[in-house]
Figure 1 (cartoon, rainbow, N blue to C red):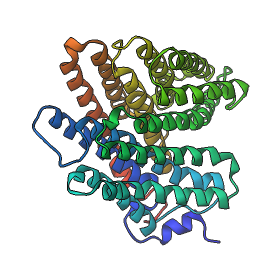
Figure 2: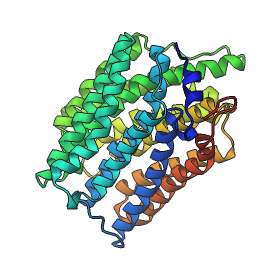
Figure 3: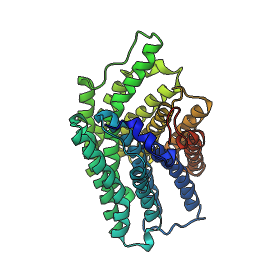
Length: 400
């Protein structure tokens, strides 16, 4: 049987298509920076995209389903072969899958020139094809442990379709069920997968340093309890985002996940930002839950800033953490964060906190929006500049 390494060596095309993380992480970072620059220009009245979505809905869709969809694809096309022991998607099939993602970004940007059905079909083609490919590998490899990931991916696709339907009906899709369902699915996926990788990577690093205080093993009884509360809390928020019931469950989930995070010993990792940033990214999940709970019972507390703790904070920071670590590890680099990497982490942290402050301080919102947008662009353009060369060339000992 052909091994993964032999399969990659047999590929004679660009090194970019030797592994799923390469095109999708680079494409996601470039799109995150470009889409934010376009959004800033749209807010300033200097640009009007020919999209059928209202500007805020375009912005929300392209982060949640555009950027995040690519990162999920990059992560899973790299991780699933390790989970199942089966071959990764390499070469032209990978290039074709990436091209469908690019086509989706273009279709949404020019959707005013298309019918709603055609724009939705082009955009949804990528996640559907990707999910079918991942699902085939999980089932063929009898990797039943990760069936929940496949279920969450299906929910994420359904949410994208619902977003398109709400937009086609003339609704404000950025405030609709589709966005909340997609965000909820992504957060549960982060809690599930993050609950494995954060304590595991922390354990590996602490053991190497000879530290006796180690994180609790992943997915113990307390972890299952925290997840069991998070799922209904987010489900209730999806269908009824305001009022005490959603607020109470979200606050409980937030508290449980703060305790879960504390059990992983993140305070002991400050000497290595590549590990610490995983804890920082996860921290925004419970902090976002608490902020959204406060907004549910006291509208105007944070505006949409609390929700941005989830979107830009939890999902943005955690994905940037995973992208930097995976790129270093899979390209044969030392697993340590240099100054440039620390700088992009800090830029994203500034962006998240500035966006939260903008919701809480409406009188100062505009300069805070500008700071948030600048920090976001610096983080993801910085990733593309620092890590792009690694993604574009073959790893040591491997031939493209």
